[in-house]
Amino acid sequence: MKYSIITVNYNNKEGLRRTIESVVSQTFRGYEYIVIDGGSTDGSVDVLKEYDSQISYWVSEKDGGIYQGMNKGIHKARGEYLNFMNSGDCFYSSDVLQHLSDQQLTADLIVGRDYHYNATTQRGFCTILPPRVSMVTFYIQTLPHQSTFFKRKLFSDTLYDESLRIVADIKFYIQKICVEGCSVALTDVVVCRREPDGVSRTYNERRIAEHQRVLAEYLPQGARNDYDTLSQLDKTTLYKLLELLENVQTRKWLTYLIKIIYRMKLKNRP
Image 1 (cartoon, rainbow, N blue to C red):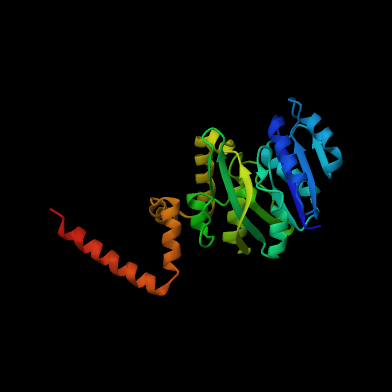
Image 2: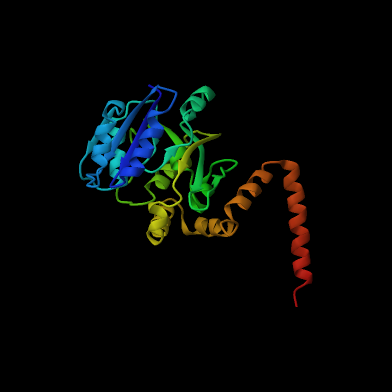
């Protein structure tokens, strides 16, 4: 079995229905579908019963939140790659899994793109992926989790940290990519059409506090100071700068321009 698609839901009946329909409509059939419901009381269970024949495994019981639900799904998963498409988020099209399978990628983590769509403005945009994945990726933001496929073996010795409520996915990325050196393949396939608002935006202060806690766990203060300087650039500019620095000739030109700018700054000092 190629993929295990895991959906965590709590009291989001209509979002759950949209997510389920986007999964069961996939043209590629080499997947299992697992839904972990946190004891919803809004009719979500009725939706699960409606699609029972198309869901490999589902359960509805009280749990400790999103990441505990995801960990429960991991324990049930048997696919080579795991994807977490939680309620309200959907596969961008019915052939997403087929496109990914056709690419025959074998990295430990396969990362596609999210499409953020605002129904009110009827406008959307796709996630910008970094030229390469490094610690700076998770310092300024993260990778699109709904559009990532993780080899199941990555969870054999590490699960999502349930003491975190919002950024346990970032901590998992850092541990696997930056610490353990797991391989990453970036693909232009748009995997997920996602809702514009989520838990991390709703609880922004807590998200920032948890993010800083995770960064402090992995980086000494001196390193965080350097990353703070880099993070003054917006994500798009920073990613473009990193991409330019990959080229030797471009680095020479950038170095030359920086020297000129610095000299001009010195001349303009009072």
